[in-house]
Length: 124
Image (tube, rainbow, N blue to C red; front, side, top):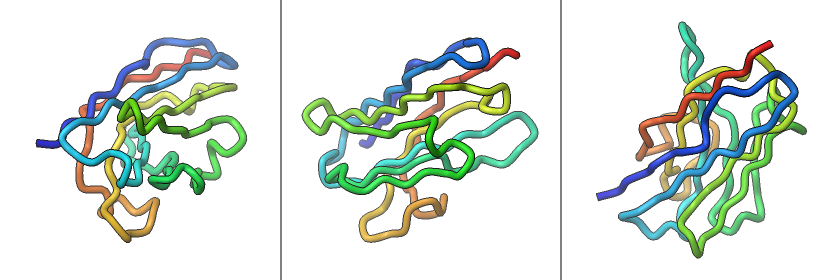
């Protein structure tokens, strides 16, 4: 079965950086687009970033564009989210997900498998 395991979350001061990792198993990773979402307390889960299987095309939410970078290593079945210039409003549980083939990025219903999430807390 498909498993996604996120890691790399933690507590960081505003302006700092973190790199999240998501290790995938149980699927042909190199053929799947991958996404990152986040959910802050009391808010709905929202799209953060997405990367096509080839890594040639990426998508970002406006709120993270220029600060976050999504990447992948198909040899390691891992997708990353490098987060720089972190702000308190980036505090959330971050989830990685597998996007269904031929579907559009950003729309949550197009992501069929989800990890358990990793907590990111940014202090002011």
